[in-house]
Image (cartoon, rainbow, N blue to C red; front, side):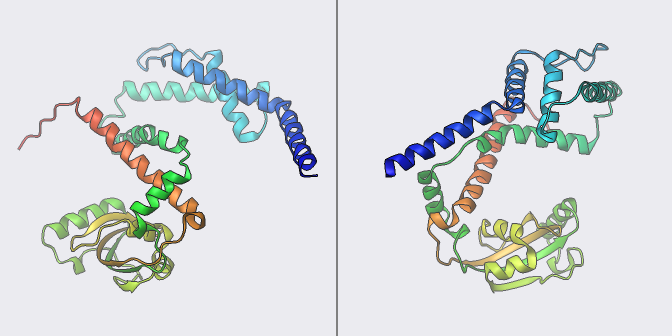
Length: 283
């Protein structure tokens, strides 16, 4: 009976897979992505300094694939024409902006390009799927990050923007009275032996997880982001609680492993690039 049931389940899954593979949209996405991947590897991008814009069939396939991923269907001929016209407009304006040097001295563009380089370096971590053994080692290496009923004692200063928090930390490091630094907000400045639940309810889950990764000490750390803004934190004590089994918190452990792995890849990639530069800083 069990064998017949297993064969029936396998037959149903195989039938469902065959039905899915017969879907035109699946074929379209598969072949479109394949073409885009091959051509992205083989064809160099157009020179931004050139006055010739060449939109290949492969470029059009990429636009079609992007459209289909969002809309769930291939574009019509009219929609593809509109996509092409929009792409040409953006390319013209992009090249002219480069020609006029509008990218130079623009802090926003500079930061955005730097972030994209970090994303490229870290992307390999997103493609990896860690097995249970990897996550079990990670949990053993970082139990404080996942312990329940952990007690945290810390001071925090709030800032409306990251740049303000950076300036605030510079002031504190320079000897300024920390109680006079920070933007006004209706949040506690001091937490004494507060649980994960207490901190999370006041400051948000994102902030709490980031806080649990900091090292206790007397120095101010951050900026640390929360749903409300940015914070400087002085974590003076952390008392670990009970660490749940991996099976109960697997998703959380994997998220933490992936985030840390991505940061490590960013650092390695930056060091490799940095070693190729000579930097002179005038005094």
